[in-house]
Length: 324
Length: 252
Image (cartoon, rainbow over all chains, first blue to last red; front, side, top):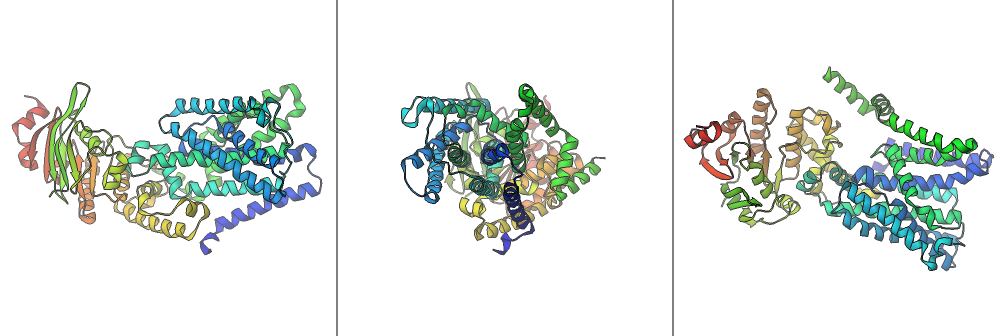
């Protein structure tokens, strides 16, 4: 227990509570109007999606273009459950998240198996196809509402629930990455051959990363369904997958805080620019490009390093000195 | 019985016989050299011994156990570790984490312990940190433990690769051109380190090298390969003066 009470963990705990307190205070004192309050849940859900995809793209180093597919599978499974069950919310929603997570995890395993043989572009094509197949199946499946969508989902999600689940997601993935299992996953990204020669079971860890990412995407999907009250197959199209991927890439590959910040920015930006009507997508695109350029700027990265890690900054300085 | 016994090992790529009839016995604790001109098949031998390539003919045993046809992963678990001719570090991970990946199988805590930070996690991570420190100290890399591996100078990257291979706790260590690209001072220092590793870890080492000074300086026995076939085998002083070897390296 003592070891859990380090300075860093306490600071993280304080941050988690402070952000929540801020949300509640803003809500109570009417700082949020209806539009901005409606954004809170999508922000949380997008953070969960970005962080889980980050495990695949940023840490395992495999490009996946089908994250919306995992999300939709989980969403439909979980929402079908709440529609057909008549239980109190406190039981129903956690169970729905569990079911959504498990079903998405099974699909993660199924997609993970070809991922063992495919690399780079080829894997991207398979995951892309997976997302599209799921969408077409849902579109033509009358049991889940077909193209008209799945209606009558109880609106259980609120920002408190989403916040709690989101924090758990971030903690689980961050802890996973910083354990021996996470190191194994990162070593696969950096060099598969060396990784295998060091006795890392590559097959096991690739599948594990795919399943873990899919489970959390599925849970995010369940919360998404219970927020809108309706699920439409067309929401989970290629654009949604790309949007999640953009969050991961913009946040800086292999950086969880970056993914969180990028998820917030990318969710808020289109809404914040709504006043500009026609120019909205244009400005959105320009901002994305600007952020990309900034992320590739050596000086900005140095600044970021100095901001986040004192030890890293010291070494950076030392290295430059040695270089001179 | 020798630690590593290789019998008549050979591999063909299509019509090309890259290695043919390779025999070698390496005793426990030996420092063995494998030399030969470019393209002689030295690295191919390493790739067969680590399961990257499957030999077409022949067998090899480690500690009496037949490992022919086993996968890279199984061979790694059985106790053969290697470094690579073209450095293959985990470039975007820190120096310490590189070694800790090598130590991966020394602790057993599960996914749940890692995710929920159960006591097993802290106990095992502490053990890993201590072992990593020991290894990094041997190679004088502990001060740079938080650098990204890709930020290390070339010579230190080579050393880190050896440290990482040692971390797996192998019975046999294969070094693929450990001195490639090093200047004479670095090479001399590396020779000392290799000796030190052999003595302190009681390690058996098979190394590929072009640097004749390094080979004759530290290897007790060597094998010369040329065009995939064994040209000579024996003590460095004898082998390096063998006319056949001189012809292979310098021409007639």
